[in-house]
Length: 357
Image (cartoon, rainbow, N blue to C red; front, top):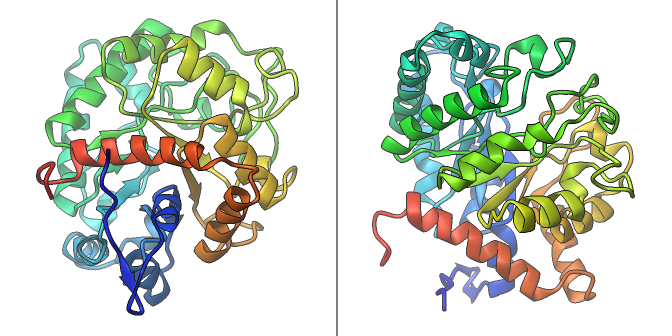
């Protein structure tokens, strides 16, 4: 049985359910320094991870200043935090050269290179930078296929290695291996495939019912078979062929529990794409979205507080919604336990110095 750390707040031990729920919450933070409210939430065990954006990079002395912020948050947590960033390369690149970080290139450039040396070099450089800063999760590689050249969120920014599923699998495998060498978790995305869409889920719903192809699953299938997938990020795309109810992937039991877990045999951690994207917030209330996401198989829900015209979701509010769902019986304690076990297994593999910490 997995031991649950004892957290003490205000002289009282924190309930184990509160600890488990906290591990399921990933948040974005304001500013370039330590935020007092976030620090309190970290110490209380109400968050399991922090997601950083370019807005969090100090403009001067960037590497040292940013690494100190990361260290302060991390050292204050009773359970090691997922310290996350989207560092795909090229356009999706938070650690830019103007802050003194190494140059990166797009997945499209890595995919088009004649040999694998290009992806290996840039993946190794990225992983070394992240590890040096104290970041332990990279929301990459993007294993979507560049099947729609007019895709406004994938092809437009060169985020896919290729339109060919075999090339995508090969390049993604090398990208992942180079991160693993430096103990950085990778999160292939966006399951079950965002490459054929013609809409941006940041702005609204993207329906791929008529365009999605089963070959978009190939990179996931082959990478899982090779033991290279530690975590996966869901997509907010709608595909009525896979989910007749029309729920986006993040909220779809058919896509996550049915396809990813049962058909493809993946039992690792599933991160949601940002729950504040308009594909979710314009169609679902907070409680409904959280209930559907957890029921579908999401282990870690992301609330970036970084989407324009989206209401900010405070940790207290999200935490309370999840706890109320459990106490009302809408979500079972056993379902929370499953996510907690997956999260802790991944953290023990990558984040703990040893299993006895």
